[in-house]
Length: 170
Image (cartoon, rainbow, N blue to C red):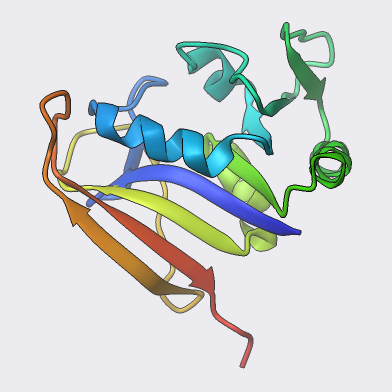
């Protein structure tokens, strides 16, 4: 079962500002949907609450939070990364999905990075200010694909779709 991070990252490593993305990439929404549809998606509470439409349809939404009393309509809530993985694995097997998608935020990415097999990055060509970052260690990750796109009419920046795979241990 592959663990795949799906995240948009600016050239300066910014992934968020004030619990929102500091850019608009409507063109990227179709890719995000294609990468996550029919799969379990793991996210933190703040990411879940930032979704314009929640829960994400046709995906099992798994929310990790420190708040044991937190409830989220249409999502499975847990306080444990191990429990989130068990739920996601069972769901993926039931759906015959080969992947579990991890969609943020920064704390969830930090906690799950050691488990990740692949990174599906939307590289935003810009350097916005922000308070949340994600840096890709090129010693650990190898770029395997890159496709550049100009900004569409509803996009605030040019962007590239970049795939990274974990390098094998030496």
